Amino acid sequence: MNRKLALITLSIILSISAYSSEIVIAVNKRSPRKTISLKELKSIFTGEKAEWSDGENIKVIDYKRDTSIKKVFCQKVLKISQVQLYKKWIRASLLGNSSEIILVNGPQDVIGHLEQDPKSVGYLEKSQLNNINLRKLKVTK
Image (cartoon, rainbow, N blue to C red; front, top):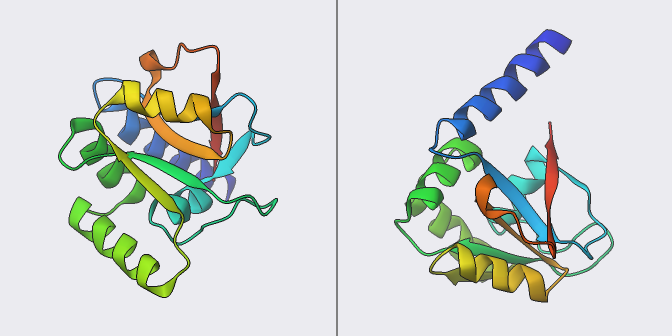
């Protein structure tokens, strides 16, 4: 069991690292969150989960379609295509249980939104997480 878990975790890390830079999940440093499970991460970014465990509404900061980092995030982390992701967002929105999703052009926009709102979550290349107002969330299995 532990070996299987270690292999799955290693596979996720290697898959994300295959991108030119490691992708990290980022939040405002004032956020009370320190870790996030892979399952919770997927449910947040697909719009299926709208609130943090403390009842705060989640604001998802994501990239507009067809950016390199979004393609990799969808394929390697969410394990779905961008088209499937948008279908999930539409479905969750129609059901009325979707988180707020803000689509941005690039990493500076992600950083700007994350700096302003402790309830928000986004992803960046590890090299872009050098802002003192942000920190990395540890992703657990």
